[in-house]
Every structure is written in structure tokens, then in C-alpha cells.
Image (cartoon, rainbow, N blue to C red; front, side, top):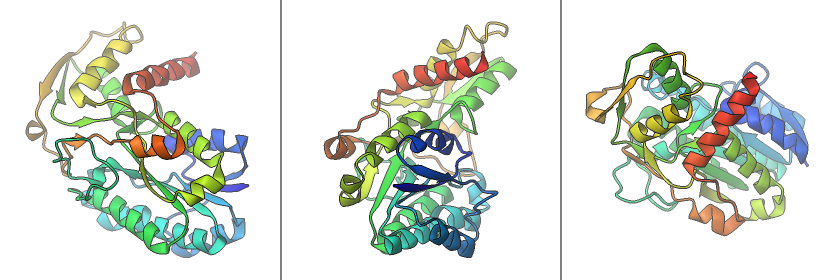
Length: 294
């Protein structure tokens, strides 16, 4: 088996680039070697590699900036995945693509399942939904894996932002009316490895799946847990006051869904794959980060 991986320097791609070679020959690319904004170059790279699996971990993820760069977000999150899907279908390959809880508007009173109607409320979410549609339209074998609140100890994400602000500020104001399933990038990467260990089954089970941490938490409570778990590491600074606020009190260019909880039952029932609960993942992530610092 041969795998073509995009986005190897991102928080998810970094882990995939280290895990996928355990099961297959892996060609891992990043923007410098494969610019997803160049359709002809993308098609040529896939045809030259002739992979059995394409794992697309590259994405435009600047949610607020996407409001003013909608065309660029669409090119990376929609046009490029569509091209990958067309080329994968041509090769008889499987495409694994990561999507987002932001394809939903967040108004549901219960966790979202795969059959719920998407209704994105920002440009980023619209670009991710367009990517899903382009992949499905190509007609080939694919797994679209929707994740929720992805984070790691590298890259740009909510966890690193909160840790940085905790060092800089005496007070942190965090919204308590946005709820999700914070998911560690490594956990998602390990789940992907498990899926690809049974390639015929994965190709047969083509479709959309939710892949997120078990359980849910609002951003305020998640931050409180994060700061408690890292208090020893930050003993040299005064613990900031943590205050809950509402989304309306924190305006941003892009709207955020209030409910980002994904129900991952279909993933477990189809593949026997289930991620740990969100707090267990956070503890493992922080422990892994501390080990790298030593």
C-alpha cells in the first residue's frame, strides 16, 4: 500500500506523518512541495505518485480570516479536495478527508449525527461543506471524517492560545455558551491509522463519519480544566482570574456555532473505533508536550 499525505506540517498532519509509515510507504507533502492552490500541480503530483490512499490533512483553518479570504478558503477546502477525489476515483484509490463541526449552525438541542442537515454560518464552514460535496460528487471511495475543536501542542489552536494568554494576562474572559468535543490531533491520527489497517473495509464503507472525543464541555469549563492541569508548569506566574462570558460579549468576524457536539456512534458501530473522553485526551496531550520539553 502507498499513501500520499498532504499537510504534513499541520497539527494533524504532523502526527499522521509519523504514524502512517508504520503501515505503508508514505509520501508526506506540505505547502512548499505541494500547493493545493495550484490545481494542475495537484493533479500532476497525484498522477505521479499513484497512491492507493490519499490522506488530506491540509486545510485553510483561519476561521475569522476566511470571512475576508473566502475565495482562498474555498480553493483549499473545497476545490482541492474535489480534485483529490476525482484523481482517487480515477486510480481506484481511497480518499480520507477531514471536515469540521462548523458545517452545522449549532442550533440543535442534541448532538449532531451524520444525517443532520448542514447549515454553516461562516465562510470557513461553507468551504468545508463545499469540500464534502465535491468529494461525494466525484463518486469514488472516500471517508470524510468530521472532527470537533481539534488541538495539539503545536500549530494554532484554542489550547495554545489559552496557555499563552494565561502567561500574559491577569484575567481571562472565556465564553461558556459554546459547547463541543475537544479532540487531540494525535487521537484522530491514531484512529485514521486503525481505519487504514483494514483498507478493503474502509473503501466499502465510503461516506461521512464523525470522529471526535467522547463527552462534551463548554469553552469556559475546558479552559478551567486546562489551567488546572498546567498550574504546576505555570507556577512562576500568577494564576489568571477566569471569567465566563457569552458569545455576544465577544464579537468576532466569523460567527461560531453554539453546539459543536458530534455523535460518533456511527464510527464505532461501523469500524469499532472510538476516541477517549475529552479530559483523558487533554491529559495525554499535555503529558506528551511536557515530555518533549524535557
